[in-house]
Image (cartoon, rainbow, N blue to C red; front, side, top):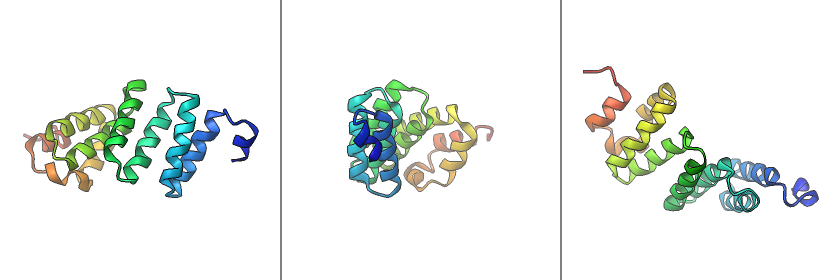
Length: 141
C-alpha cells in the first residue's frame, strides 16, 4: 500500500498487493488490485492468471475462465492456466474441452500434471473416460 501511495502507477505494486490479498483469502480486493495492475499494464499475463484464480474462488467461474483465456493469449504456454481450464470444464462435464486443456497442460509439464490430475477431485466427473485414463497413463495398453 505504501508503494502505491508513492507511485500509484506502479503495476508491480498493484500486482503484488493482489497476490497478497489472494493469499489472505480477500478475493474481491485481490480482483480489484489485479484490475488496477491491468489498467496500467494490460499484457501482464501473471495478473490475468491470478485474477482468474481469485474469480474462481469467488465462484465466478466463467469470468475466471475468461481471465485464464486472456492470460493464454499473452502467454500460450502458461500450463497453470491450461490445467485450471481443464478443471473447470471437467466440472461442467464438457469432456472434450476438459481433455483438450488437460492434454495441453500435460504437454507443457507432464509429470506434474499427470500426478496432480490423478487425485484432483475436479476430474471425478470424467475420471472413468478411457481418454482421461490414456492421458494419465500413456504407456498403458
